[in-house]
Amino acid sequence: MSVVFSGADPAAAAAYLAAADAVVRLQLSTDELEARLEQCREFVVGHAYAAFMMSLAGAADQASRRADLARDVRRTITRRERQLVEILLLSVDGEQRRAAALAAEHLEEFPTDAKALTTIDRWFRHREQR
View (cartoon, helix red, strand yellow):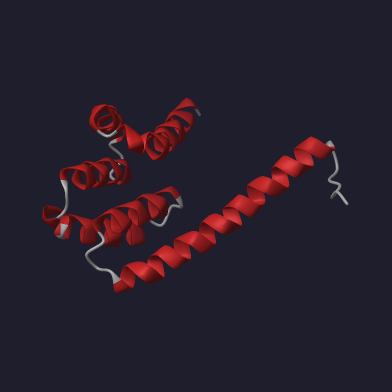
């Protein structure tokens, strides 16, 4: 049984429902990440990613707190993780161009991170076009 919405054909209604479900899953995932991060204070990439997600959601104070946690323990991680953290924190700080440049450099050395970084890059390009 398909759900009917005024002005929407079945494909548009299905796309809407899929997007709404994705938002709900994202919130649940973010809540779980937050709870887990409280147990893993040294998980720098997790703190940086949570800061990034919170900045996208407009939760500046929470993003700042997580970014500060990531910055405090950044020295103890691998080069790959340091770059990922820097890309995420530059994005949180509104430095999208610098984040994009570092992401391009990062992908030359670590191509397995392409999917996540491409998604971030696409998000910012879409926001800049508005």
